[in-house]
Image (tube, rainbow over the protein chains, first blue to last red):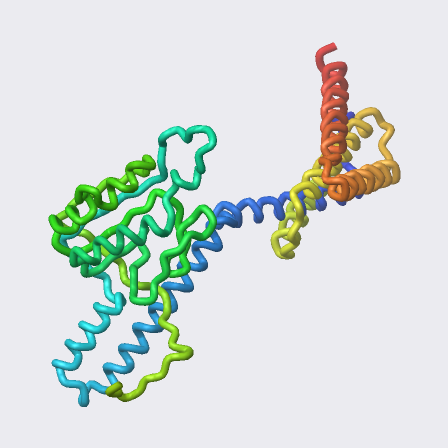
Amino acid sequence: MKKLRHIWGEGWSITFICVIVGFILSIEFKQEKETDTLPPDKRIEELSTEILKVQREREELKLQLLTLQKEYEVSPEELVTMENLRMQAGLTALEGSGVIVRMDDSKSDIRKGENPNLYVIHDEDILRIINELRAAGAEAISINGQRLTATSEIRCAGPTLSVNNVRSAPPFEIIAIGDKSSLENSIKMRGGVEDALKVWGIQIEVQSVENVYIPPYKGEFRHQFAQLVEEKNL
Amino acid sequence: MKALAGLAAGFFLGYALQVPLDEKFSAVIILAAIDSICGGIAAKLNLIFSDKILISGFFTNLIFGLILILLGNFFKIDLYYIALLIFGWRIFKNISAVKKFFLKKYAA
């Protein structure tokens, strides 16, 4: 081993290069760890849901503040009406019997020369279903987890559907609370929406469920232009 | 031992300083460094080691590798693969030189 001594007494250059190796290794190690915990694509999603959650929390805290401030002024009946108003505005999660409507784009082959647009779900199709459900007495409706409020839009956004400014892609899951059988019949009615859409091979599946859950509206209400006034007799 | 200490020092330094580094650059730098270390060991065994040669070799290789990356980024071609390929090839060549040395020493 004595003859190998010249290896162990290495020059300063190898030490220097080892410093560089360690440096790069640690950087890579760190980056690896960071990407492991937060994949960049997911990060945006996570952050946006985080924002929504915090916004909602803030709204809730505001409301709590309001109720606490008026604790001695607000009668229990008024609190009940307030809860009712919140329920109607879609700010509360709801549960009850209802239907789940699942829709997906057409799987049938598109014949030559035909417009492929006819075979995908459009905002109109969803709107027709929502309209039917509402006509059949749906009390609360959500599309892919987005609660429909009085100001919710349902709109094609490229190949995706935008509801409450949140985009989602097919398959769509529309959940409605209401009388199960009338909701189901409103969609399955002969010559109704289902029949009309099935012509294009769009897949619709209606399922009545004893207990469905509808999440609350998680966005904000903006009243930039509207102002409260006394009721007028016109 | 100095080398291990250097490795640890570099590790902590890199951990403390948050340097965002593109993986192309780290790949080229790390392979150039490993290439130099392997070359250094092989040279030591053959008693032709020199600090000057090792450091100058490291930096010329590194600089040319980085030029290849920048050029590749400019033309949108992955030219840096050639640097990785040559570094890898040299690393294995030097390892085999080290192996040959020990084989001669102990097996013959």
